[in-house]
Image (cartoon, rainbow, N blue to C red; front, side):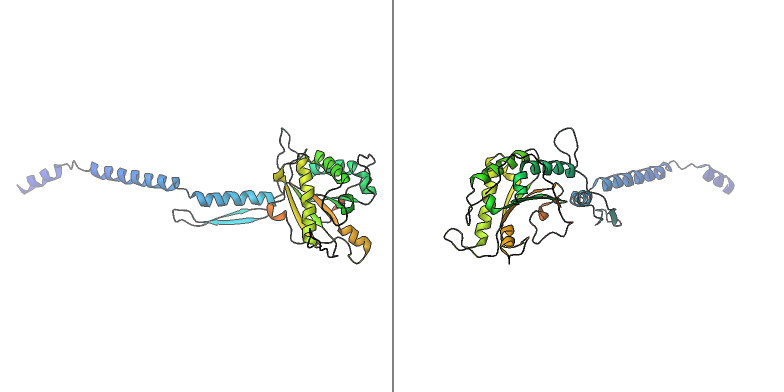
Length: 281
């Protein structure tokens, strides 16, 4: 009897073993959906910071290291952008033009138009990595101690505006004086005079079709001289309006430098023979 009972127990089959496989399948399915949810959860803020840093690195050519913590609590991720050259921006149209070449052509055209004033020592045109700078002595633009433009200044600004309308670079206009104090009912100091002269040039540009959002006027007073204020010729050189066509790579922080630039010295632009503006007196 005992032997027969053992045989019956051995022949008994367990019909519930499928529950083990089903439980394993459900566990794997649950783990799969957990992983999919974790992958789909993206921290947009940190990815925007990463994207902005990569773009800035390509524009400035500097190395940038960014450390972000994934939302799942995993290990930190370090992304390093190597030193790169600034990428030239595209110009409107079907062609891509290097900013240096575009500004080089503009500098040549300005030198042709302003050749008489350059030869007369009233205008100096230079080009540097920051852009094209046109320094115009105050005697070519304004009466002594005033900011109302004379007839010659209107001709100069009209000619320059015709060339500047061919590009879309930002334009910075700075007014400078010498160190001799001025105190009148209109201009209590050199600050007001320099700012008013820069504003007059900006207004003439705008009247000749240059968009206002491209322009900025700055009054420097007697600061940042380019010559010795101890001599009459030096003071005459320092009394000027400086018009800078900024290179497209320049950012807003570089538009208004607080001190003279440490960049390579600007290169004077040679003035060809053709003349279109009569020289000032």
